[in-house]
Image 1 (cartoon, rainbow, N blue to C red):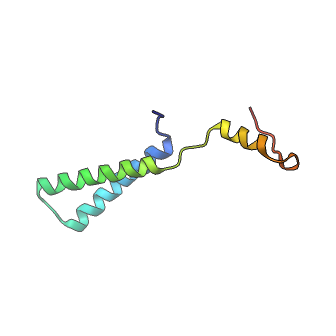
Image 2 (image 1 turned 90 degrees about the vertical axis):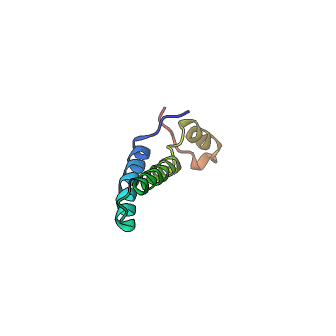
Image 3 (image 1 turned 180 degrees about the vertical axis):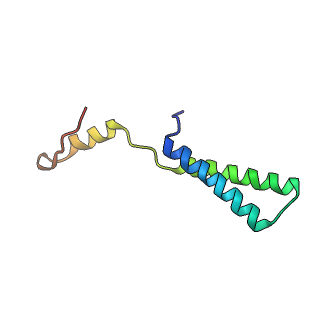
Length: 79
């Protein structure tokens, strides 16, 4: 399983923080159960956001695209 990138971690963490604060302010709950449900929902949302951030493409795909391009449009790639 690939490791998450810095962007994925940043987007996921900020989603958890901001969605938790927003849901707590909007719901105005003060019970322990309500806070627990909101925290779990925010964690699930943060995980969803972190996993849907596109990962950077592999270098192999870039090389393959350069090799299949017509001769006049070929772009050199750094190895």
